[in-house]
Length: 97
Picture 1 (tube, rainbow, N blue to C red):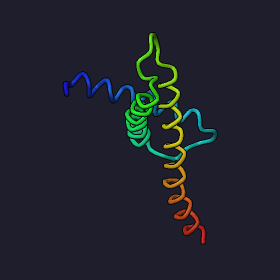
Picture 2: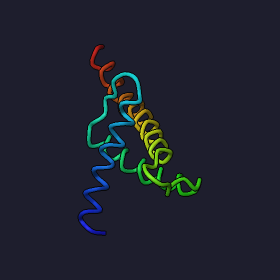
Picture 3: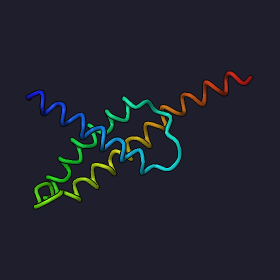
């Protein structure tokens, strides 16, 4: 893998993660690096799903593939915010005693 592939993968992960985070209502208390990781994973898994569905290679912009990737990123951000944020609520509750 070339350095340009890694950089473009990170850039796509940032965009997909940010879009997935914007889709979820409310505030997600997860760090930005975790959003990027979720975006990169969602982009890779979404590409695989799109290939399995036969919509990965279309003429022009692959809107269906992008929708799958953003949906997976939104799901990942939501699940991670629930797990990551739940840990913070537990600690804050303990401090209020």
